[in-house]
Length: 609
Image (cartoon, rainbow, N blue to C red):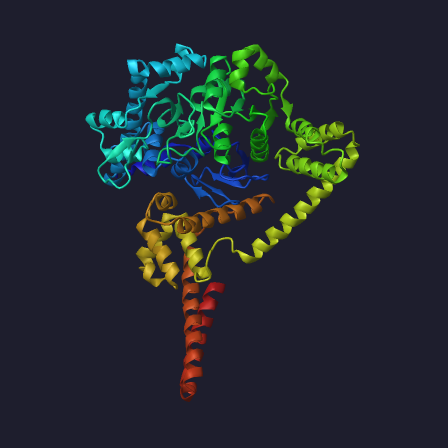
């Protein structure tokens, strides 16, 4: 029988290889572990199972298979993930369902509209109406090669030029709205206007090289208009996850193993033109964790070249607080006073910026000079607070070998004995460890590891676990015992077993994970079952003991007896309630209890044998 496309993708793509492109994984027992790409952590809790073809973070709870990872990490829709992974695996994707094909078609049309708009803006730049924009770009020092490299364009001042151009090309207004290219006029259901007018246009790309939105810059500064305008949030444009210049500079970033993080588009373009093609910038927002995860795909060193004003200092400190726990080496470039990267390369040349780059400070040197400028090191209370802040930042760095180096650096900057700071650091680390241990103990007590609700009986969980582990279990239950979901003990057990029945296949777990109709909480239940079993196996393997292949028939037979015992216990509990409400029937009801207990004893004897 022909396999479903999703099954083929999961089978063909090695999940460890795929995730290793963005997460540093190392083998631990049967699985691979690394720092989670979805949240900050010091100790690896992100686990990938090569055998089961799944991943789970025991810190933040993110879990799934290779398709889920593509959706969660790269921000793709389910349909886009299928399409991209199918291409990667060399598979044809004609097998996509009508619903998925419709979703893909819509997203493709949005991308097509954005690509068409980019080319339109480029074309207008070289017309008579685009002459002021060309003159503006020339005044900023951009040559024709740079304008072409960044595919810069111009949006004319008329209210609906782009709208008329794209609708005449066959794009529906609904697609243009969803692409963020036009807006609906307030109070008029059928009137629309262009978002970008009389602006220099900078296309913004995702990591796959597709245009997802635009940044527009006014030709003249005005109090009535923002200097920069970005595409609004859309299905394909999320500025918290995008970095201007990342796609263009990806090869240089890999080659130099570093990025230069600047504040604006103009800085990025000027630096690229000057030869610093690893320069990137956020898209109108302060740096985010999602953007750092994008950077981590290419390098682990960041040079920060933000302005030296108060806003730039705050942005630099926030970047430090986010980047250090993710394992980045962070260096800060001290810019010439009153200048930004754009003006420096234009006034003083590329060599001057090279010198600034070569003399970049580590984060402690930067914070020390900042503290000196703010005159806080001469006041004991503030100096103590500064030291605690620096030690806290050092403690967030995942690589503990770096802790000693940075403590030494801090000691030299402050002219304090290394031993004094080391003692403070160890005391702080000890307190944090004790606090974390207390929290972990509390969590262990309050939250079960494999079930999220008390309405599922242990026997049901064990049965589900066996059926999830082997299709043979299903076949045995159905063929010899005619067992189905109606024979489960609880409503939740019935629901979960029905899902197993529906998705029974050689890879039942991934079939469940790929079903968009099943909520994430239910998927997590099945994933937790798998990983809890694997953790148990790993613990035994530490002592040189391997778990033998399961005797499914014996295990199932025992479980079915336990099911009967549990039903007897439930029946006895119900009879006891009846005695309380109907004392006049006590003798008869007690006799029933005795009969049930005799049955239970016989069943218990069977298990012992």
